Image 1 (tube, rainbow, N blue to C red):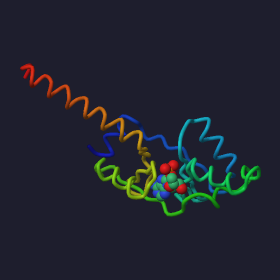
Image 2: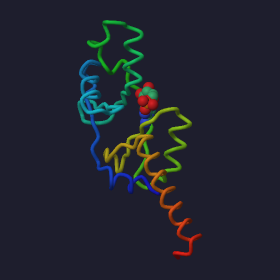
Image 3: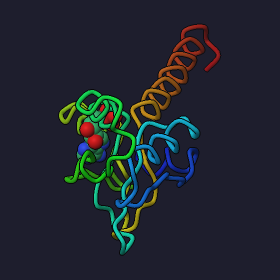
Length: 144
Ligand code: AMP
């Protein structure tokens, strides 16, 4: 299955934030929307990083009570790894496993068109296994 097929069901919505914002503002968006990452944009609207709940935890650990007012740009990951709509889910899974992260933005013609999380991949695989399981059961019991 391809990334584009997951996006068809999930939709293109991606939560973003400006790179000049604080960790407190980022935390608020993450908590209110029950998400795990924000794509960080520069003044030109281009991707300049990705900020995950893990980055905020690290900032709070290193700065204790002071971290909410810090600039998020100091804690985001600047080298963002992306995938494309035509990429296969198996490839996305290997990218996540190799790099030890759970989110990856989807870019098409330099435009942000979605975001895939490890949860989306698990859900897709579960549906595929269920379908395969039902097909095999029907086959064994002579439905086909
Ligand atoms: P996550 O597991 O996605 O919450 O992220 C774990 C760490 O990897 C954090 O430091 C993120 O900033 C970073 N990260 C998450 N997704 C990506 C990505 N697609 N490219 C580069 N770094 C990422």
